[in-house]
Length: 306
Image (cartoon, rainbow, N blue to C red):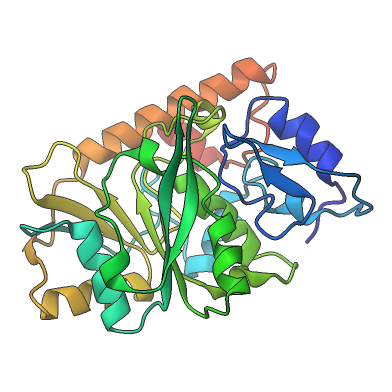
């Protein structure tokens, strides 16, 4: 289903309204959009499209969470705060667990390239995508949300244009909200090559629209990552897809990290997720005179949060 709106509507409803997540989804496959120094999209010229891919790809124009979940996973969530996942584990390694996951993905041909952030500006914060095709060239990655703020999804198009077939991405939840919309839309684009999604759990990433996002846990990723409140060299992983499970199985089999619990305490991240959801839904209600706006939430979700 395509919404009959395009770039002027995107500017009015999202960019000028302060909802923009700076994720890069709107311009990832559109030649009429580029990104400014602060990460905001800029419409370059008049577009004749009445049904714009830009508008339909943006996670802030509409987000039917239940519909996307059903299409992606074939199931709806049981955990209202963290989204649908099949397994949670606590892992330990003396090396960067994020980098271990990427190295494992390369070694087992789950990806042929990875999009990672490269800092472009600290004030305002903005990162641009860098496409890497060899594991040895991947920089050491952190779990700081601010290190991923920026239009990283445009890197998937860069990888697609370069001929890569299985592209990974490490990013914040907003990046994967937009990717989920694109992968389950009626538009045909290079997003089809996006094959591995590793989300950093995110309380706020530093973009203008972060205070209107209700996804803490990276609900539309293959694997969600958090090391909040954990000992050094530990991370909590939420596995959401077969792709994510295969990656973890390969890493464990190779002894790249140690699984120290298959039933870790999730209360800390559940609490953080619920706080983000309720706070930012209230922000939306204030912004839009009592209307939730782009979010399509059911009664079960709302009753769980308020």
